[in-house]
Length: 178
Image 1 (cartoon, rainbow, N blue to C red):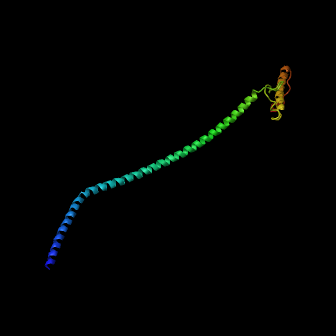
Image 2 (image 1 turned 120 degrees about the vertical axis):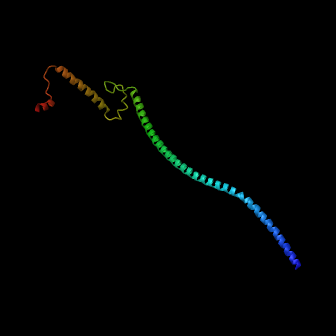
Image 3 (image 1 turned 90 degrees about the horizontal axis):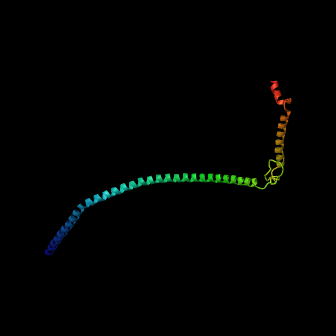
């Protein structure tokens, strides 16, 4: 029993020493955790700044999306405008080339050597190429010449009639009946 009592005492002393060491370790660790409050405050401040930054990023992201939508709309409208302008220019150039082609054709026709002879309104023009293509070109030529001759003959008759009685014009009878 004596041994048992010695062993118990020794165990009790060892237990006290070990518990005092554990208490000392825990105390030093708790003392170090007092400085942890400052670090925890820094961590909380950083976390709040990160949250504010995320919120700012979301706001800026929505603005960027809005601007991107506007730019896309502008690009589409510019593309439509370019397509319309390209189409109009194509039509304008086509019309200009057609008129130029007609003008050049007329110039070639106008300055080609003449093959008609005699008095004619087409004198000096190369109408030989038109005879088979335009129907009654000779009739047109003769009618123009005949009209001119009829007018000249009628004026000559009026000059030669002088003071003589003019024939009664049927158009003037309408005024007599009124």
